[in-house]
Length: 512
Image (cartoon, rainbow, N blue to C red; front, side, top):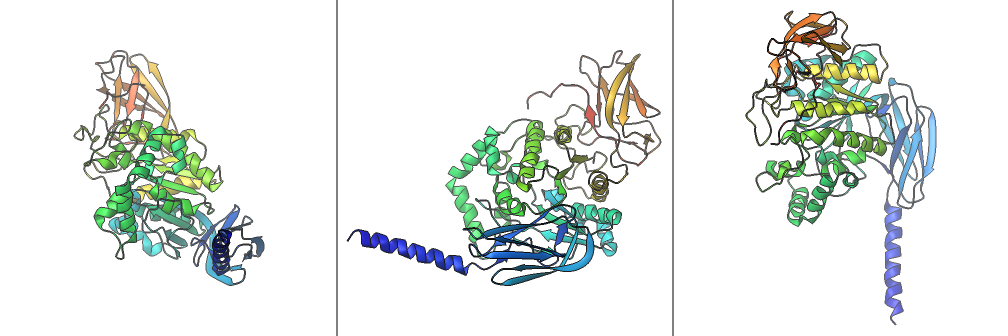
């Protein structure tokens, strides 16, 4: 008697499994839809779900490739590398049923992600908005802003034959298309005030103890989890207050908005983020009810975490040559959470200069670039409107690094400093045509001797070098250039691209 109910339960579960399996219709990932852009020049994965063991065939651009869905119904095929094409074509995905995707082109695909300055709308930047009338061959996939406590298989959004809403992403796409003359596809996944930790996979907790502690606390925080689940399940969406609460949590943006994008074939990822991680110089602060959203890594460690984040994303995309282009934080006059009121011109204040130094650490990895914005920004506004130059410079970097074009894509960058009598001579790379934009002496240089008392340097251009001196310093040893919250700078190369900020000392600021 005791075995019959057990056998009956097993039979019910078996019948349920069979019914679910047979009812699972063929469906590609939402990334594969009308109007999409496929990446040229590399293998292109196409994936989705179907009934278990169902045979799936994908046809596109003269290619036909087939596979069988697994026991879980998941399937994936890979198309061979293709040449760019503006000509709209159809992709056919067939199994027991057939799906036809129309208006598909092949070109360059980039993901554009980050926080509010990436989300910043085209409508808020008149110079960029004016380009819409002359834009062509630009398409976008706007990822819905949402969260999840588990890694999702699918993403909410669809491809549209229109430019992205982001001013930075559109500017980048516009100038890249003008150079390459091929379709540009932008997958836009950003959310204001989100931290780096919000976009980090859970398994990065194995590498960073601070992130492990944050994740474990979130797992144990039933109040927060219930609050988020309640917002997600609401019939009329969530309030602004709930929106802010969700986007400032760790990991759950990655789960919902980034994980499902992999391994969609793309050239790279543009990352404009960091403001959320500038609240503290170093470490993770203790938090209370008033500053719970500050529990993120500080500026000093940000660069190391960002490097690991890039390596982890390349693993997710199975592409060690996936390019990452980081937008340097521009000029801004506020300090850290503990000391917000600083001198924005000071080379020693705890300003965004320390975050920029961290961001530059990504250049230690191959297939990376940092777009210099030290001449941009607004001393009092964390959301500056001068986004057009960022798009131009991002496109130049992509032209050089991913399209292999012979263009000048970077401003002068420190090569070495040599002592000369009572002066220091700064040598640069990318310095052909070194000049100042106003014809005056270079600004933004500070020098110090062993006492580390910094003085404004008297400067003189000599060819492709800058000579620094100050009567108060008889034996200068160190240089800081543009190393301030909102420095005054005028040094550029012949391509009118600004010199990158730097410091040659190893001193660190005092604890906050």
